[in-house]
Image 1 (spheres, each protein chain N blue to C red):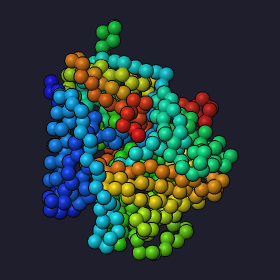
Image 2: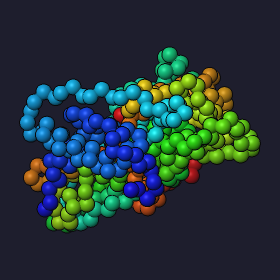
Image 3: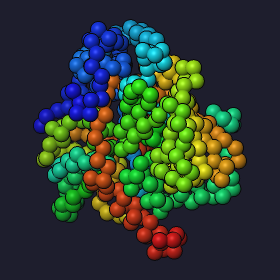
Length: 134
Length: 302
């Protein structure tokens, strides 16, 4: 698995006034009372507008696999933070925490994505962790 | 070279110094080649800092205001608002769960509060219910209006061809602002971005926008304006890398007096990127689900 380089992460952190694409009230769409933290294998990374999406297969305690969709910042925000397509290959195991959608589907807004080796990518869209929301 | 010719090519000698540490600044008109070089140097410099802890040298002082041949300030370049959370509400507030806080951007009235009329306050409170999130026009990929286009969390490029200021807002809109003193459009013409005309007041660019359609929201908090809204923006360059921005909103149908917001526009080592907003707008479907559920429960109108 390709690793996001130190340079990329440093570059992302250096963009002090980066952009976190947000175009609606996140608390309207996602439920702050439903935090989720799930581990699974990436099945798809959609570099789409107005937000990008990461899909992961999560295996439940009953062995059943459920596909979850995690919304991240917009494509441009991720790109400016240093994210690249190869950073999130299909099959990689990640742990994502965020908040589930109010409509009750297996959809959530991602706050942070952690890889098995401990590396982390900030995913936030418009939540309190959006440290580049100035 | 960008397909949009967004960088004016100039001799490399006009490129600025790359500041040490974590910030660089690129002067307007700087060539793309220079931008690439500057970014590469930034990464190298930043990595060096990450690997070798050492006292960071003082950043290079930004240069003076650049000027056009006619002596007017040269505002060209990529800028990003240090918007103070204005896109989530104008008044000072803490972060509450998923709603980002803000430092408060209102500088007039002095109490930092929006001078809302009673109906305005009631409507804003209504818009803050989850089922009203669907009603924010930007959730439907409509343009943000004025002044919201200035502080949505996306950058903008300012261009300055003779007789005009052009602002390319990355979030899917633009403004071509004539400086020749022409009148506004007839009052019956109502636009999402309104009609902007500009003039210079010393080194300050003053832009007046009228002919708004009243459909835009000021931010995700649902703070509102009506079609009676007029906005007077003031762009005052402070040095080569910063413009102080103020916008005075006058809307007698919604507010008891004009009020003014203020924040800085900071130059960015960046370029405009594409935003195809409706490509995969799953959010809108989710927000519609929330709205429909509330309607079914009888807590709101469909």
